[in-house]
Image 1: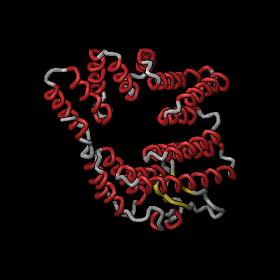
Image 2 (image 1 turned 90 degrees about the vertical axis):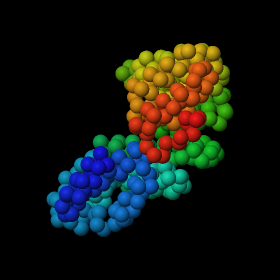
Image 3 (image 1 turned 135 degrees about the vertical axis):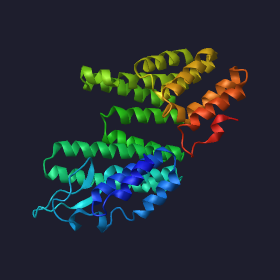
Image 4 (image 1 turned 120 degrees about the vertical axis):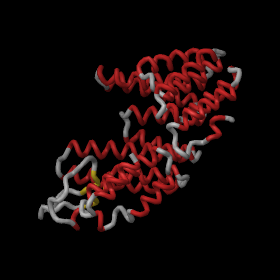
Length: 336
């Protein structure tokens, strides 16, 4: 994909600005997926200020562009001229997340907050135009950006700020199962099991009281995952194992469930089940499971605990992972 998009960029006329932007977005996304973060940043720098005049609709002939995907654009004014930035909003999010991949977490948070303010601006525009679908869309986008900020705060181990942020979000989105579950899981990380259990119970009540049967079915796996994680922190390995198996019966590619199930089987003394389970997932979904650093690390640990010739086994895993993982993959995960 990186080679293809590069060739397409070189062949595309310079006045096809929107097409070029979309090609650059595809290339940058591919580079990030491959772990080529420095190269992605270097090429992003070449594009200059993504909010600059060269990326403004009003600086080009009217009706020259079609809206594709979620664009950070303003609504047409009375003169019929489209105004605003033509860069896809997803590309701006990718730029912010790239800072996190490069280790500049604070810059990533700053850029995410800027995007949150922009999404609120576009939501307000939709409200003026009675665009209910647009309002919901930008509200959802703002919510996802808030979750990214929360994850970065946890990554920084700034738990007081993370807890405050999560509480503010839970008040802003009181009926949002994802936010409430995230708050409960944050309490698990902080070791506050009592509060985590209370939040998970509130989430269950919320789903049963305010959701249709179809929605309840949709969130059932999430509720099961919440209870499984709670059981892990309480050392109830067999209960957690049963819950994770229930999740995997519906979502066999769920990395978090498989990883945690392997840990449960380890503590329950069931290594003969844990090893083939993780191996099966890694080889069935090589681009996701096979490049997951925590999963690879646990796989190497299981080999050391159980398998004779663990060094050879870990070398085989390293060869398989190298087919799919980018250059940024932490080789220490192989424990070689």
